[in-house]
Image 1 (tube, rainbow, N blue to C red):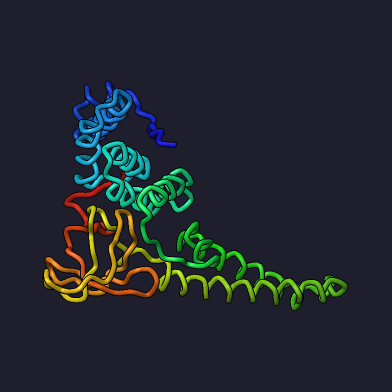
Image 2: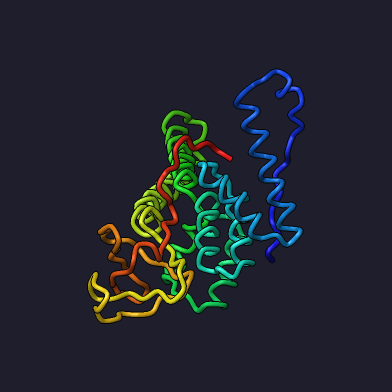
Length: 264
């Protein structure tokens, strides 16, 4: 369940001999990643976390890196932080089944609160906006080609009923996937989603320490940011609740961009 993923690391001797600075940086990054994997295997989870987190905080984006960091934090008995990094891995690769599976393990362990998206949104989470845009383009071309064939090729007259049906179905599909894109922006976008990372977190009625409790938020719980007020954040909570939490107790799934990020 908590196995980590390796990336293929290429031999960099030729690049090093040429003194290519970007390739040196790539080699250093790969070396740090592999060293983190070795430390994880050896049970040195604190050392592995330091290396993985250093890469992530330097702006290196990789679903394998995020997944491995999540596994490391889980081993360090910090399930809320682990859930955050699993969510970040899924943000890069919505089809990352192992990360989704490990989120279920965290949920079973902590009893965290998660939004019930419904079957459609659950399906949309496995796609990306690029996937949906590609489907829109595909069916638009099918509709266009079928309609053009009917109008421009008289010899296809026997096939006209079928071609018109395909055209109609394709236009319907275009409309459906355009609607899905709009729904994606509203209900699937994770730009304002955050995960409770700290234990014993509570949502309260106002941003004052003596305010009444709304609900306890176990580590790994999902919230949506409504209003950011520095040390306090007003959030939407599953089951249509809202409350204030200390900003330091949650982590955004889409973090603030680091200086000089690059792809991992």
